Image 1 (tube, helix red, strand yellow):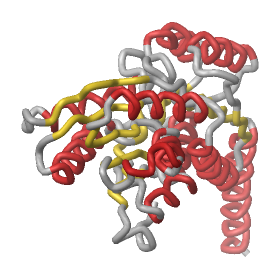
Image 2 (cartoon, rainbow, N blue to C red):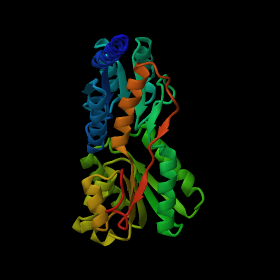
Image 3 (cartoon, helix red, strand yellow):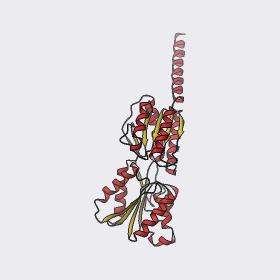
Image 4 (cartoon, rainbow, N blue to C red):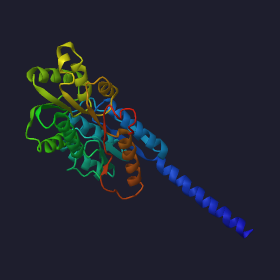
Length: 309
C-alpha cells in the first residue's frame, strides 16, 4: 500500500510539473521580424514556425512593408506594447534599432538577431551567416574564375544593411590579394527586383569590358540572369562571371542556364528554427550562449542537385 501511495504521489508530482511546463509554454509568445517580404525570409518563417509549434508557444510573423529602419523601430515598439515574450529580428539599419532593443530588454523581453545583426545593441546573440567570411569565400571564388584579373561590379540590396556590407568587406578582403581585379561599381537596389534589373543593365552598358558581377543580396542573382537573357546582352553570357547569394528558384535556374557560376547558399530554415529555440530557452531561464554561425555552401552546376541546407 505504501509503495502504491508513493508511486501515485510521484505520478501526481510529475503530472503537475508537466502541466506547469505546458502552462508556461502557452504563456510564451515569440515574434519574428524579417527585413522585408522576400522569399529568403519565407524559409526563415518555415523554420521559426516549426520550432514554435514544437515548443508549444505562441508565434507571430511580423513583416515590414519597406526596408527603412524607422519601420522596424515602430514594429518593435508595437511588440513591446503587446508584451510579447521574445523577439527575433533581422536588422535593416543596425544603429536605428539599438534604442528600441534596449527598451524591449528593459521591459523583460528577450531579443536575438538573425541573418542581419545589430552588433552594438543589447541583443543577447546573433544567429546566421558570418557574413564577412562568406564574402571572403565569394571573392576567392570570383578571383579563381577570372584568373586573378578583370573589372568587377557589386550589386547589393539595402546600402545600410550590416550583413550585406559585411559580405562586401569580405569580398574586398579577398580581392586585395589580386591587384589586377578592379571593383568599378557598387550599387544598391533596396532589394527590389525591378530596380536590380535596371541597375544591372546600366552597369553592363557602362562597362563593356566587365568581367564579373557579385550579387550580394537575394535579388542579385535573379536580376543578373534576367538581364543576361536579354537579346541586348546575349554576347555577355559566359563572358561575365556571376556569383550570387541564396538559392531562390530563379537563381538556381540561372545556374542551370549558364548565367550564374556559383551561389553562396545560406541556411535560412535553420536560422529561423534556432532563433525561436534560443528565445524560448532564455525565457525559461537558460543563459544565452555565444553567436551561432549557420554557415554557407558554395553551390554550382556540379553540386546543384546534391547540396543540403
